Image (cartoon, rainbow, N blue to C red):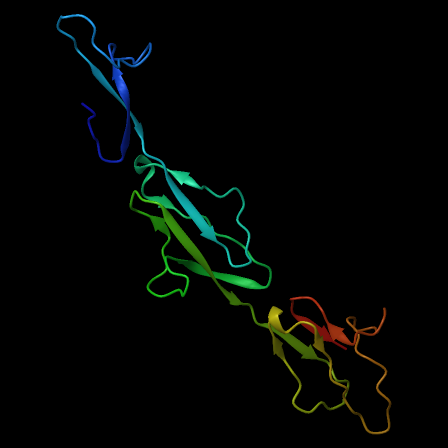
Length: 178
């Protein structure tokens, strides 16, 4: 007979308690036997739907004896990780651990980081300047300010106006423009 044990796969019957030798498939002599059941823990899989993120050395298999298993935190440039969810529409609560012995798919939810733009206008004026943006809005084209009696030469990333003028923002970070 083939026995069952929750969370385990039956490997075979053995004549020794250290499971040495080959498994017994047939008893050929009429005598008393003590048989030992060998088990392997069943392995379950974790599938990560990263939605553009990355996860270093993700754990993709686990056994019941490893539970609860804490899920690692992925990364994505320009975003904050908002949690693992069990549904692709992110309904329900975020999960931080696997607590059940079963195959599972987890979905990474992301929130775009909001970056700021600070304009040092040098007594110039700018109507309704864009002061916040996210990575999804890149590149950001910079507005042209006005100052009576002056021509605008350009925006610079340094307060001494060194380097080349900047006409658009191409990186997800905070900026101060001069």
